[in-house]
Length: 101
Image (cartoon, rainbow, N blue to C red):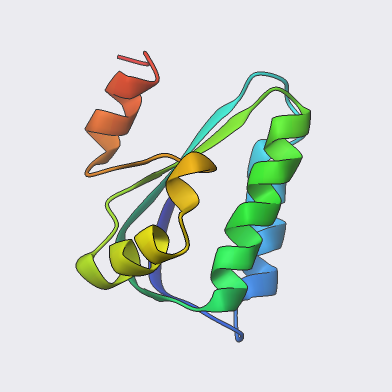
């Protein structure tokens, strides 16, 4: 799933709905979020991503991030999210890490 722009208080509910729909309750799904065009992620956005990750985990599925910019990567690192949601420099590297290519 490719996201663009800002993820903040004005659109986090739409994002939550869209990602829940994308996951669709399927088992063993690998959902890669391409964040290379996301300029900013507010705390509400990080909360959505963690919530989606929790829902996916219940279905033996996983969430992976790709393409974090420098600012978003600093927050990701500061929040110690690597233990919960892996992140890769690009979608291609995420796909390779998941064995999808």
